[in-house]
Image (tube, rainbow, N blue to C red; front, side, top):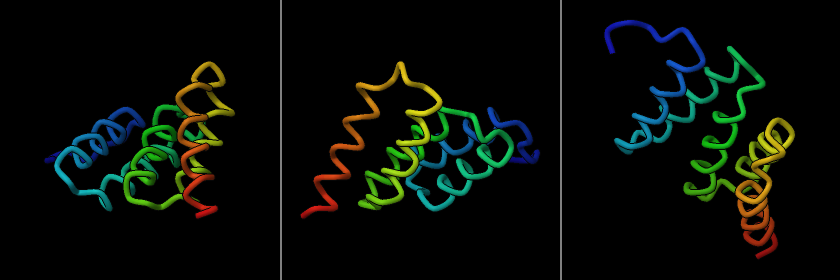
Length: 92
């Protein structure tokens, strides 16, 4: 990318692109940057949670999911499935 992304949306889109291309560490950092710009960005919390889950980073996934749920309670069904999955994996 020739320009430095500045908005939370730019950073989010960059993270999604990096994730799609298998650049997971970079994607996590881009999600984190988006959240530093805007800590109330529920989409970034949610997708960061899903990526952590896919990487078997259950504590991180659960933490991000809980924050997403705080910000977007209407997404409860989707977010609770992540939290339940993490709880199951952490108990195993």
